[in-house]
Image 1 (cartoon, rainbow, N blue to C red):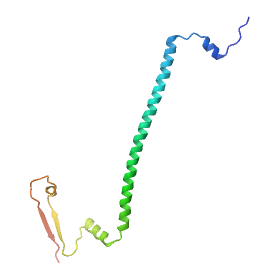
Image 2 (image 1 turned 120 degrees about the vertical axis):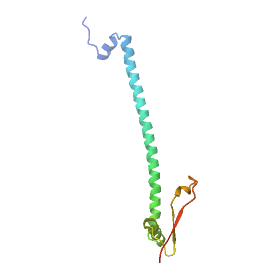
Image 3 (image 1 turned 90 degrees about the vertical axis):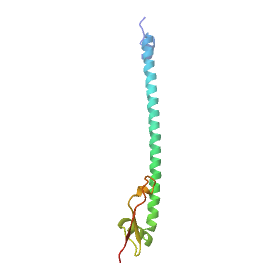
Image 4 (image 1 turned 60 degrees about the vertical axis):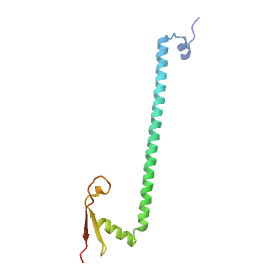
Length: 124
């Protein structure tokens, strides 16, 4: 009696599979699964760290924005202009004294030397 053609699945099942080959195939499948899970876990941890970094950056930008908005609100006032003239250009009002501290580390307790100051008076 002629043998009927078998489907590929039936042929595969009818072959004798050696236990060592089966164990190796199982090891490869499990190893790939573990590697995939570890890669996904590492990716999730990296995304979590990136999210934290972005939140910190967002908070820093928000604070900077609030500071700039406040400065924009007061930029045209006389007090602001006077403060910037003093800060940037060292301008003084008439009859003011300028104190120049020559050893600022003495103010913060880093030395035993007495504080040395020079008084600069504006001449009329």
